[in-house]
Image (cartoon, rainbow, N blue to C red; front, top):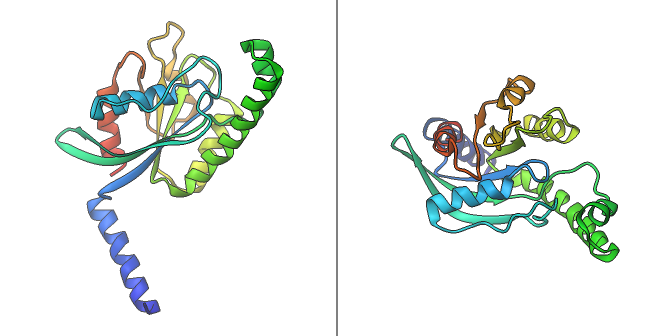
Length: 213
């Protein structure tokens, strides 16, 4: 294939994407540990396929390898979107095996193994950014959003010019404050939900169809 032909083909792809959107998208679910990423992935898959992505746990880094489900079709406002959904390991700036031993009752061997696998999972999650078309960034509305992890993830997404929806999760908790996340990151759309209870999940689907096409 000649150089000019490649340019023409690339231009056609850009034209089609701009005016018609992509027919099939890879959407990564990102965020810190225990923000509710897998709970959200399970909610999406259960709503549209009747299946689940994987187990959840109160212990951080339950998800230590990225998990993918292909051809998940969601619909909202008369529009459909075909997705590959990627549930990624929680992003953390520090993973210490002592945390698993002292706070979650693991023995030292299990704690060290969990910490090693969690670190490898963070690396894998970052690599996946090269292959996704958009990101659902999950934040816990009961926690302070001004964290190094959240700021680092958003900075990385902005540098890559990836479309992102911030999913302000756990609004069912009494201490939840979606407004705090909205104030912290006003440059991005914020969708308050409870992935566990199902609150405003339809609002999330409407936002996804609009934002990721």
